[in-house]
Image (cartoon, rainbow, N blue to C red; front, side, top):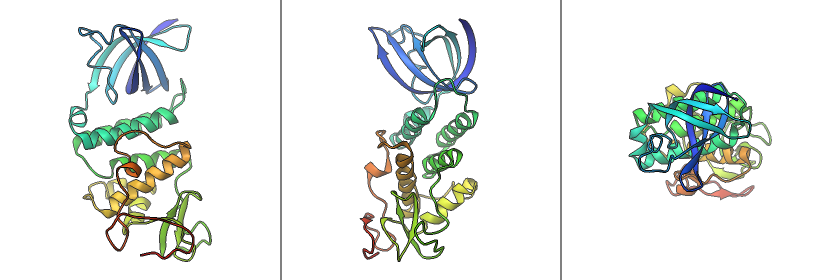
Amino acid sequence: MSLYREHGIVLRTWRLGEADRIVSVLTRHHGKVRAVAKGARKTRSRFAARLQPSRHLSLQLFAGRGDLDTVTQAETVDGFTAIASDLGRLGRASVMLEVTEHVSLDREPNVALYQLLLGALRTLEAADRPLVLTGFLLKLLTQEGVQPALDGCVSCGEREDLVTYDTASGGVRCRRCRAGLVLADGSLEVMRHIVAGRLRSVLDEAESPATRGAEQVAVMATERFLERRLRAPGVASEAGLAPSRASGQPAREIGPQAPVL
């Protein structure tokens, strides 16, 4: 049993008893840590305003014998106030926190994931860029080695005229083998830039059918990897489908050999 200091990002919290709170924190060196913040729900608690989801904190924790550590100090490093006051940004951040909560392992260090989440939150805090969430999800999937197949048709290998994304097979399909979600015009190019490590080249793209379509594919691919639907507000699959490549109307899921508009 000992005290230790860490930096961490609060992923989620839940109540414990009458006055305490449990926090799940992704730390830099200790992986995901669950800890009790005693008295955190009291009005005058020094923790009440700090232990909120998305906050980046400097922490002192006491490692006990059980699964839960105890928070003894918490100082704000990044408060992310712009995210907290903007519903659009808050929704995107909530998705990132939820995904990280499911991907990270208890007490298993994952510095790459920590840096990815912190960088995404800081970028989102600076400006509400449409591709921050898409970039986070696709880069996370790439780190895990399960990024969607975007180079050619997952059925026949055709590298041209790729028109749909098929969740079941985890990649894009050509017009002849089409099945799944119709790709919005330009969304495939956006995703290829991100997966290839060139997010900065598209990060300042204005919101468009291409950015919305790329976000929806990223969410679908992430849900396939997690084997669960995401529940956070702002999820593309719940907020509305991306426009189709020709009509500008909501995109459709199509079966094999269905006509592509």
